[in-house]
Structures are given as C-alpha cells and as structure tokens.
View (cartoon, helix red, strand yellow):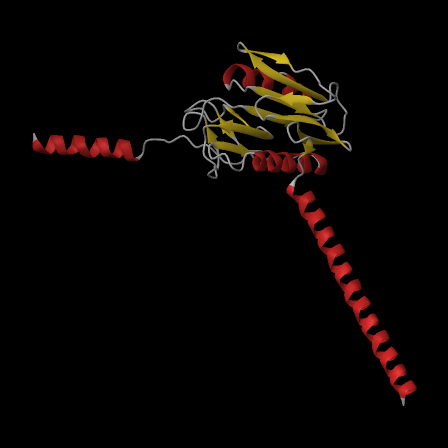
Length: 244
C-alpha cells in the first residue's frame, strides 16, 4: 500500500512538473512602425503623453507593446501604437495582460496607413470597443493617404461615437488635452495653458540651440571686453606719452 501511494505521488509530481505552460511572447517579429514618419509620431506621442502624466503615479503610458486580452490564448493579442491606462503603475512591462493589469484601457492611438486602415477601422475598432472597452480611440494617418486620415471615437453606453472637431482639434476627455496637427505633424494641445506640448527631442534641440546662442553671446561679450580693455590701455599709453 505504501509503495502504491509512493508511485501515485511520484506520478502526480511528474504531471505537475511537465504540465505545458502558455507562452506569451513579448515580440511579434514585426517592425515598430511602417515608416520613419510613423516611428517618429509613435515615439513623440508616447513621450508627450507620458510627460503630461509624469506626476501621476498610477497612469501607465506605453506603445507598440503586445497586449493579451484572454488568459490561456496567446492568439488573443493586439499591439496598440500608443495607449494610456489609469490604475496601473509606471513600472516597465514586457507585455500587458488584462488579467494581471487593468482589463480596460483608457486611450489608444493607431497610426494608420493604406495597408492597415481596414484592420484599424474594423477588427481593431471592434476589439477596442467591445472587449477592451477603450474609452477613447483615435486613428491618424501621418501621410494623409486614407480617408478619413484623422478620426476619434469615444465610448458612450458601450458603443463608439465619433468625436467632433473643435477649432481643428479633437478634444480628449481622458487626457484633458486636444489632438491636432501643428506644422503637419500630430501634436497635443493643452487648452488650460493654451500651449502645445513638445516631445523631448524637440525640447532638447531647442535647449541646445539656446545654449549655443548663450555661449556665442558670452564669447562676443568677452571679446568686446577685451577690445575695450585694449582700447583703454592704448588710450592710457597715449595720455602718458603726452604728459611726458
């Protein structure tokens, strides 16, 4: 009897040890974006939204991250270009699993193109609306090759309703910002401060430009002081000669 129980326990342990596990890959092997313009838009949008909420501890902002929405089925996956969700910490995630994190997403932007717009407007839209219950969903084509090239939807009573443009921009209740083009590029506008948000790379470039300008001014001022001192020394020498 003891030998039989031992065999049963050993068998059970083997079954547990070799039980198959579901793998949720962190990459789908696809490029981050179709073109450089798509990539820049993605990086800039993630950066601007993330900085906008940098002082809010439970707002997670990411992009091009595999999002799994059904436990046990790794095929139930989608990869939003840009998304934001409340109630999730800022810690780095390799993948987003709705059964481990918040099951609903607050904000999504898809950067569309002629090769993706059908999926963006149909398959993805249905997933965001019915399954993930994304509060606001935006579709933007950086090249304006599809129609509409820029549109937004807001979840009202479980269904998407198109967001109306105001002053050429789409107001986001989730972000507290407005989405619109500036110099032909999608940017975020803060209606409270009446200013456009700038991505970090533009802010760094401007800061470097100001620093170079300040350095040039300092060099010019230093040279001007040297010239004045030289002129003063020359004048003193001339006066000294006259006195002699």
